[in-house]
Every structure is written in C-alpha cells, then in structure tokens.
Length: 225
Image (cartoon, rainbow, N blue to C red):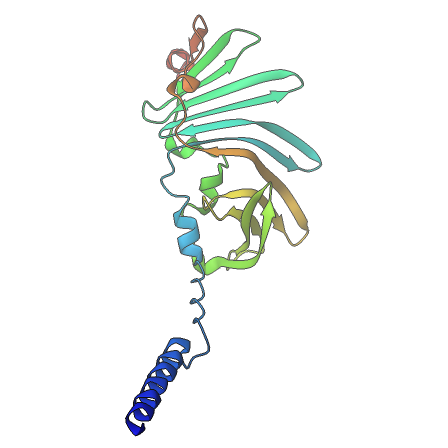
C-alpha cells in the first residue's frame, strides 16, 4: 500500500512541475520590441534614384496660381502648362542637351540647347536631393492627399527663410512645400496624383508632323557685338 502511495505522490509532483513549466514565471508572452524610428537620412534616401514619376502640380504665389502636369524618367522631363487656355509643352532631353518648347495651337516647336544649370524646375526630389539632415526638424506625422507623410521644417543657419515639407514616408519625397520668410508664406507647391515608376518613352517625343524651329541656328546668325 505504501508503494502505491509513493508512486502516486511522484506522479502528482511530476504533473505539477510540468504545469508550472508550461505557464512560465514571466506571466505569458513577452512584448515584441518597439520598431526603430526612421531617421531623416533614411527617409530622404528613399527619394534618390527613383525610376521616374508623373504628377499634377499647383504653384501659388502672390495670390496667383499656375497648374500643370509633369513627367520625369531618367534623363527626360516633360511639363504641360495651360495659361489662359493656351497650352505650352516643354520637353527636355538632358543627355542630348536639348530642350523643345511646343505650342500645340500653332503646331510649332522651338528647339534650343539645354544646360544642366538652366534646370530650375522644382520637382519633388530636388527638395530633398542634397538636403542636410542637420538642418531638418521633424514636426509631426500626418496624412496628406491620401498618403502618410512626415512634416519637416528646413531652416538655413544664416537665413531667415525656411521651407516646410510634407514628405511621403513610402517614397521619401514631398507632396507639398511651403516656402516662407518672417513676413509669411511666399509660395506653396502641391504635387498631386503622384505615380512613381518609369514613364513610357513616347511621352517625351513630339507628335509627328510638328514644325521644329532650331533656335540655336538662329543664334549663330545674330551679329556679334
């Protein structure tokens, strides 16, 4: 009888021990470690070397606004702007160093040389391309035009001017920029319907039959002073 009692106690001890081991002493599953906060450098790095993009833009300054469309891909750029119902299309081939200004209503395009330092277009990636992260302050995270964005403030050390950017977290480029000085906001640029990806080559070609006037040839014929 004592033999069976001892065996019973041993089995009970084993069951209790296994139960305690299964429950653990930490009170259940451990919490997953918090995700690492993305740095400004990491955010902006996403916007470098994008294959291309297209978007609508609206620029507002001094109570006036201008809107249009833009296509970017590798070394090519195309813009379409309508002012007073007159459409003007500009196509830039940076590799060939050529720029075309095409006016559909006239069926005429003007060809002229293009220099790298002549490109003053405020494309989204230009804002963050060479931006020093030390000059950037993250203000908040919000949703703008349907995308999650980091709102950042860029302040030059020796200037009172500043730039506020709404930078998309997925692509690392801004979809809104506010350029201001102590007197107030001077310019607002909005980039809407942003689509990132390589653009079809045909987008950057003039329509067939367009008359092209080579302005570089005309410049050669001008009298030298």
